Length: 506
Ligand SMILES: C[S@@+](CC[C@H](N)C(=O)[O-])C[C@H]1O[C@@H](n2cnc3c(N)ncnc32)[C@H](O)[C@@H]1O
Image (cartoon, rainbow, N blue to C red; front, top):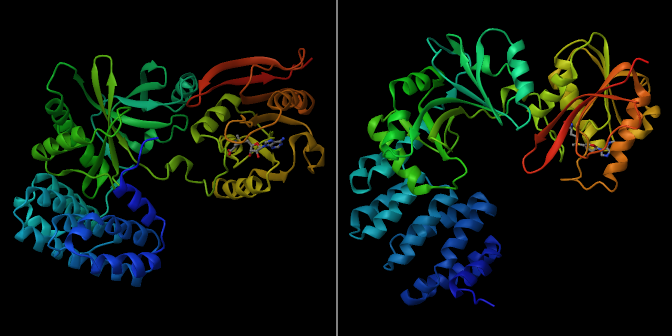
């Protein structure tokens, strides 16, 4: 068996201690130790940073901060470096910034300067900005972004209108298999956008003229939306070409129109891992070309995604909206809650009749019912689930989404016991995302889906529909229900079939 590094082992042991144990035993021993022992025992500094930030009260944190500040004067460079790294974790401010800047003035070591820069990137303010000539441009950029974030919050403005936008491409990303339903939604939505291309997992649209992001977010069936800023062919100097696109006149017009406050963005080389060096290099070049564009991973209103595609990289700008305004009615969640845009697709596939009675036998947090009710024409919805917590969440979400009509009844029961639910007789629509047996194990999933078909065949009025995400290749018995639609949908690592059945009118 591989032997563990003793310093790591020491840290791992300290990490398990409480604040009190660390302080009374380890910190006291560390303070009494000589320089050689302190250098060997720096794990205690790291452990104090982590344990006190996670579980210290305010007095304990303050004591730890004062201790770390004293360690910034330690004769051993390694001790000072560990103290610099631990300070930002415990919530440092101007006093600690001053302590770090004092070390910066004294030091002649490049390595120490680098660690000071990393700590000051996290906690530095205007005093650090004065000192950035000795810290380098990356620290300046990060500190400026920190100051911008703290000074005035920035946000995406959904209501602002971007004129003359017909040359833009907007990518609506969706689960593979749902493109057709998204296109249908787009067609119904009116004249603002036209579809220009469809690929698996993507519908590309173009505005007819001017548009607001709020217009895009009237569509409910996509997962995420992004504005295409440009494409870089693989042969070009990639960093320079990407930075040129991100700082182009058109990109800045988009940023400026749709942002209130400082323009801050996260960068992601999609599916390529952290790519810290590439992010640093690109963010640095963007800042040189356009210093109002600040790379900042914390609470940034924008995400710039760089996708590797066949001809090169596609650079896309996506608003980071938390919560997604389309589904902001969600007050709470259940363990296997539906992906909200999938619920919207299921509701759309169900179609819209007048005076509908709709039942979701596995309603969970209620998303399919809410999405269907929002489309109108519903008189009464019934939601059942065998989990009492799910029923409480569904009620809460439904009340937040639709405070007025339609009437709603939620009941905790197995779907096979529907007869116990007052008023739940024949229905015109069953709409559901049933258990898949993935996140929550189901003992007999096949039996459950077979029972769903049998119950639907009994409970649906003639002409009534069953619309659901079928996790198994199970079909209804005989010709009790007629298949009208079936599409394979990728739910992120596994497939289901989105199916629509109609009960024959005889
Ligand atoms: C995939 S989740 C539904 C998610 C839901 N559409 C939402 O918006 O959150 C499946 C739900 O089925 C419920 N369930 C599982 N077996 C059931 C049964 N036999 N009868 C009723 N509900 C059941 C689970 O408690 C779970 O809430």
